[in-house]
Length: 544
Image 1 (cartoon, rainbow, N blue to C red):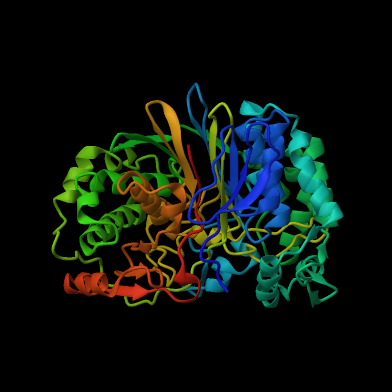
Image 2: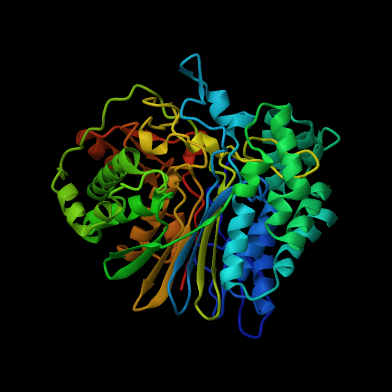
């Protein structure tokens, strides 16, 4: 059973012990700092780092390492992501630790006899990109951290070695994924009791993972990208036709980037630049919507949904047309796409009474994994971190590295399938996002920070594949345009349009029958999500 959405807040209050609270209709409030993640144990670790004198970056790093133990569906050391940091004073910075394509990659690597091969793309050792998480977190720590590196990794080591109590949610999640893990003995050994699924209340110990984390604590990135861990990864690749070598691992480098800046109704926005497509698309949509009085039209009203869907349609079309790895695509027109002038041009193409049309597509919408994870941190000094990282699908490619204890990603599936190809997942075969050696694959992850009058206001992000971008958009619109608090905004129903397929996908019961009828009268196809698509996003946010 899917969770509607989860928001776990751990607060640091003046002269009071930390409390772990599951929120209701009202948000949890705190005065001196907050950590938000999908797992209460990981959030608690982040709070303890703040108590120990660490800052927001320290807390975010410790929380991320702990999630690799407590939330294995998405928390990781074998994946990658983005960390956006807004210090209370000084320049903001974006850390890109997205995975990269191994040196043996090519644009046609996911084709068999000229035809698209989904297994190669998403379900094989060829699906694994060179992981970036460890290097990215270490880069951020070296620049901003206050506490010793080992102090930030130690809680994760202890939990992996001593064990965590399996929650009902983790037991359900593992039971669902075990059939896909059956081909991989190390995965079955780690996530079952000699082949028997874990039950709620059991103790899950991950000693190989603890050893891998020990090497990271001792040597930093060298403890992952060189030595024993690198040898284990390479051996697994060689044994099963994968591409990653020790040379690929040693060559991996995270990238420090300049965040994109935007402004929406008096709020300053800080977002990730490419290789994230989320930041560019988010600014493009907000710039376009700023020309309409959404509050007057009403939350969830057909007029509002129509305009937001049209903004989504245009931003996702531009995402497919232009965006990819900036090192491989230096000509990307980012400044134009996020400009107010371009928004005015796009606005002129929207008919407020009629849906636009996307290029025809005959494929059906397929399920998209929600198993990215996000965390937000604001400390007592109002330093803010918004961090999203992932294995791509839930539990990545389902392969635990034998002797390493950690799951590998299947992020190569975020490259376009092949020149000119479009898949059922909605990937487009345009050149900017085709696989090449060392290239980063396009991402929808959208860590975002809003400020007003020079002070941090909102740190937000979400899992959800391509729905991440629109989840963040809808939370911001709910807060800024409709005056909702962060809990109300996250709980509010959502909808999604991504250019292709040409339809609005709404959460179950998210739009009223009257609204659906009015949208269909304007020419929109509206579909209610089922299964995983019954909900969109599991946003984690802090409103200061």
